Length: 436
Image (cartoon, rainbow, N blue to C red; front, side, top):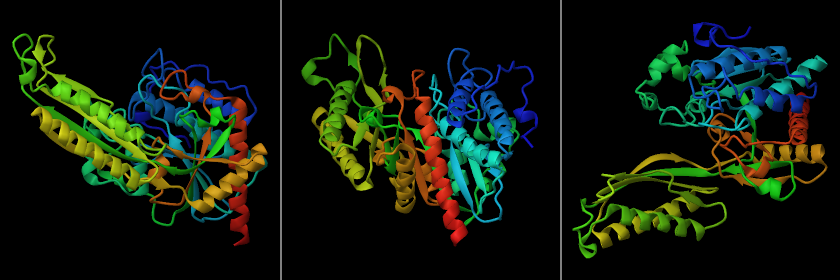
């Protein structure tokens, strides 16, 4: 039965024509992703914005649940607001999990997250069409929050499922002051039961995620698919430089304690240090706030963020240490006070070698070419789910490497190959399970 309740019912919102005319699973997955970019599945009538626990999220859950039911699955909404569809197996063994997220950044593309969910549904649909039940059940999970675009934390809902979420992380509010507890109540869920979304230990034996690459490597090499070997670890810092504001006309250049000049030097130091590292090391200053922000006042305070990523924690942490030393040097030379707060650390997450090898074999079977292996610079729910079960991740070429942008696009033929590879992967797991 599809999920119901006042949290998922929005009869006042006109629903678009949801007819998907393709009988081909991969192409149908692409078309469904495109359908989910417009109201009521988006809060923006001119683009895709779908934040966690909003009416757009609720409507997306309702629609995807219908597609799950059509594929022979039993959908439900868990305590964290994730939509989960189960395709029952021939026995009650631990489940294969296939998942990705359905929330989005503001003004997003159609495929970042939802494509992996749609492909999971298509895997179940293919089995259902054959009347087949595998030795194990399959759970397709549409995670409600991966991007962190509403609340100041990312991957809240996969962390709940994996059992790695600290209860203290639930005491948060969005930019409008709405607390997570209030948002959950509006969605028909109780913050007090949020952590019960955790899968019991031993209830899942593997996690598979298909996702657009969000980068240019596959396209540059003329490849449809790639196999992820690891997901880069992340480290985020909040930095404050505090100097002395003063009149722009009367403050001598040699006597200024200009916080913005210090920050500008720091931005270039971050870039220099990251460029000197290995190819998978990246560092970004993504947000900068200047105070008092007047044309004729020397900036007295600058707040900015630094994010570093690498395929190995040691590489990321070494670069972070170099950056912090550079900030100290810059502050001391300019007479600027420095404060640094570490706001997030996500360890690098290697994919399970045995599953990655099996997925590479499936890609080779589907495409006729050896599988390209690569590190994911972007974070994914798979890096969290590794705490629950061994993980594998399939990358799909995206046009121009563009993501987090309305221009995000895929080739339907690539998605057909992705579906074929996923089904080969699942068949291999089933044969191994039957032989055990």
